Image 1 (cartoon, helix red, strand yellow):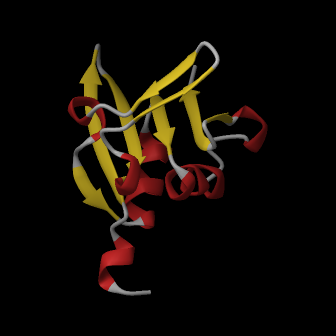
Image 2: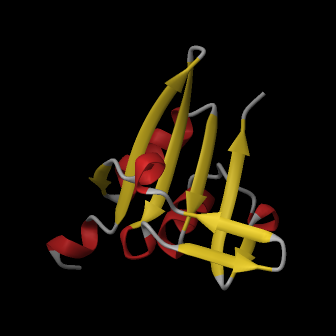
Length: 104
């Protein structure tokens, strides 16, 4: 794995009402929009573009988050690996995996 492969995701933390919302997105799909039927997935830079992050950093942020939005192959794989996302909860829009997590 090269150095550039280590940071193929963006991680952004948002705080609202005392809760941490984490947005994670593969770098390759940031800023794009995907549509399938009535579903629209907009990977807006204002929401998703934070710091470049490695898998360990993403996993740590997801474990601590109250809410998460995760998009892209690598990002969703991280969320599954740290058991924050159930593989059955993933939706695909134009082949792009997307999942959301809410801790109650």
